[in-house]
Image 1 (cartoon, rainbow, N blue to C red):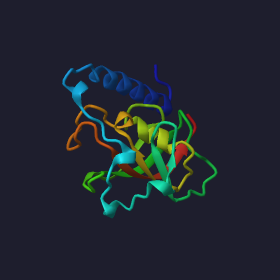
Image 2: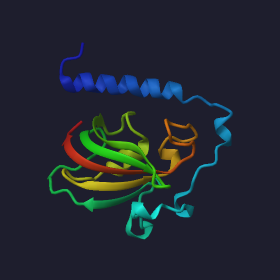
Image 3: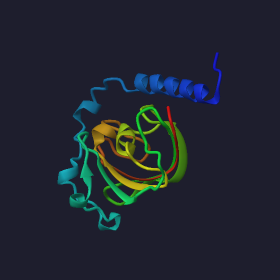
Image 4: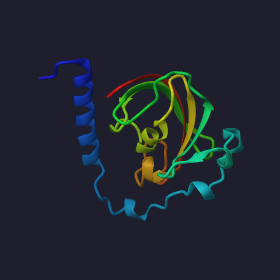
Amino acid sequence: MISSPRSARAAVVAIAALAWGACLGDDPVEADVEFEVIEEADFDSALGIDLGAMIRLESGVYIEDLEVGEGADEVGWGDWVEMTYAGWLRSGAQYLPTDTIEFQIGGAVVPSGVHVGMIGQRLGGVRRMIVPPEHGYGAAAYQNVPAGSILIFQVELLEVSGG
């Protein structure tokens, strides 16, 4: 029995993670997809990306704090977060309009690169992330995102609570 809203959210995230995993299969067509490489990519100048000014995480995700948050809480694994976000391709095409979402860090609601890229972000902060395909949608096309694409996200952390 689910005893609290947090438990209910955790159950939903767990079910979503299982469903997401079941959809990822080993499609032989996907095996031939060439992944874009961040360090070799040309980014549309309108995106204002300067890799030299960004921090490259061990995962290959690049982060840049456009506005450093002032809150005492920072994001860690298992935390619940609420954020506004938007997403672009390196061509400058916006594929995700600005929206608000709540999810658990380490769950399956957004690409894994967003989870990794948010670790350490403080409440109220605005962060840009460049996510390599292996931490984005991988070899699968997603809506109007071609398979193997680099993703650029801008997120503002609105709320964070311990997991």
